[in-house]
Length: 301
Image (cartoon, rainbow, N blue to C red; front, side, top):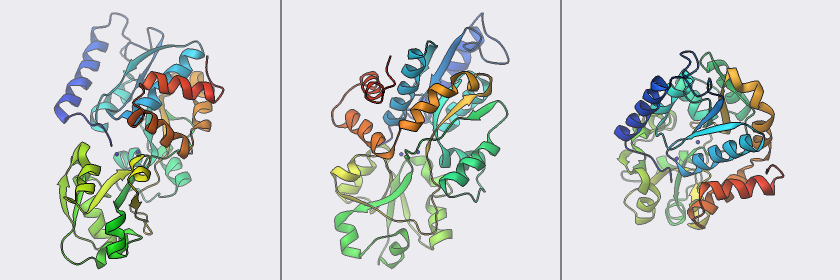
């Protein structure tokens, strides 16, 4: 759902602990819902990833425009850090990505297409959580190479990497090493062995510098276009479809569904890339980007 500005694990866990502590210390806290809902506000969270934060800010402003009180809890970190907060009700709305969330909940899933992944996700979600409408926009993992590397080795798909002589180094965030679509998945599905380099935030830079051969890049990253990178096709569907999807506490899902589903209906793949360009290239703030996008789509206040 991946350019990802990811906090170190320790910082992410600390942020999650802080959220839990705040809920526990709140005199209005409801042990079943986690404080903020009992106080009347909707708690919107985000990953420590600029694209995810923009979507979360869009949700927050759309809800405020509809008259809701919103508490923002952004840049929390990795899924392992924020999902316990979402499940507990401390966070009541979170922008997620269908494929990656499904594999987090069910690592053995066989769903691959967008509709099948969404249906499987609805079944896999823990009690108390609801998936609202998924957007057409995707921000999924991909295996990407430079144009020069693709031309040199005649690469169009992941399968073609098997024909590259010599060793290959795959770069990506540290957690990719353990993901089902990571090095073990490449070997089991495509028969391709790779060395792995935990490149984190510098993955694309390392790819351009030639220190890695293949990069795990998210498909909404504008640098795929600006740097003329080649996203390798995935004929065996190693990587699941991963559409943007709002995950809400069931207790408030009906209350916010019409507002958030309107956002999802307008969020296309091109729109998501444009939002990311506004952040990474134009250097606009997430609140300004969100306000402009909502207004341009007739969803402003």
